[in-house]
Image (cartoon, rainbow, N blue to C red; front, top):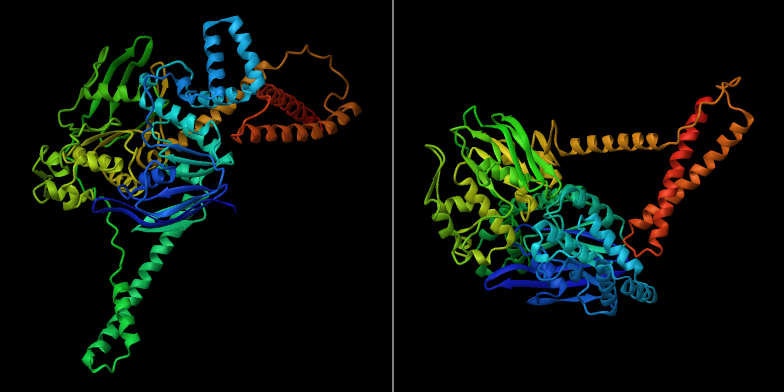
Length: 621
């Protein structure tokens, strides 16, 4: 496999804090690599170093000549005064100038200018490029090319940044949390796009389904060392556990041998020089190995909920709308004790608004939410909490409470409570501005749980949290003695934590689905297949009834010849359709995309007709 990038001994620190040391990694052409590490260990910083945004303290990187790189930051920064299309076309190139002029002429309806720019588009061969970036934007549900970037939501901003970075099909694509703020349809489209693309990929993501379906290699940074696994996320989990078991077994053997060697060392004074020097040196190496047992610390969510009564909340004809956009339409629902509800739906259908209405942050237009007296909400919002970045971690928590008491036997000081969330006494003295994005989210989770809620409402809780913390949070929610509502696009997290779903379908329609997210997707896909079949049947031309013929239930000679020909035709059409599917999903710029799209629709229609005719004749056979 041809190497695109070779990283040797990269080290990075901030002050006396070492993020990582001696990272060595080779990236081969066509590899799709997932980078995994705990929050605060420098995943995003490593991506910035590779992208050339930040320098390393030491080490080297050698990139193959001519490699074009694309980089998506975790929090994209774009000029808020530019329009969406200007964001794509602001590089000053002739290509950008012509496409932008053509789009503006179209928007203004200037026929002369349109004709002039069409000639320029032809001369520079820009039709394919324009079609490609419009196709990508449409797949990511960005339709208004002239909307100002400053008016976009966080999810829209992420989608525009993602489209911009993949539009030119770079040789090496760096993605830092690409699924944050994407709805499930966009995530699944991106999965398909990247898995079929020839681009080499290095990404940081907490989305375990995404890692499983896209990556063919996992790189883990653990304890300052780098480990590589040639396989997807499931393979990584299996092999990582084997590695840890082997390391622990080696440490156990070293401890047993150390006891024997220790007795030998103590038998006579070293000063006599009768001991072999090589054996003395080996003793100290063995002592070091025996003391290197893994000390993996995880977040400890042993946080008990306060008592919750039988009445949780009841929705009575709850209505909410913004202008013509209906969020809730006469919602009636009685929430049960210990219920764990997941909320899914496309971006913009009102999931977060529903939560804010329940909490009283947003008023209803009519109707009511009647909340039980014992309910104590704990709200973790996707916007996060506005910490004072100039304060230290411990001071921000002490402002909420000096002591956290859960029952007569369980209480913590603010410092002890923070240590449960992996903030050491030294970390607690850091200024919040110095924390990584994941560490800030972990601190936010601590401030939510220290208030002892019995009804947790988590709005996109998985964004920026590392996978290990997510696993701990999933286990905590499974045993949580209270109620839970989760809004999330993380399919794996939803499958692990909720009992049923509210599916926000738009226009105030909320579907109560009895199952987890994977169950819902299977049902939705089957419903889509049935709907497509009904639509095709309805579109079939109605033919006049034929007069009844003798032996109508048997094939005629001509029908048998037709039946044999159909098998060959269906095989050829299927091969052509698969070829076009592969072309559309390749991520390459497609020549004559309009012609090929029209042919694709024609092939699908012909294939449906031929298969239906084949079924009719096969019944006679």
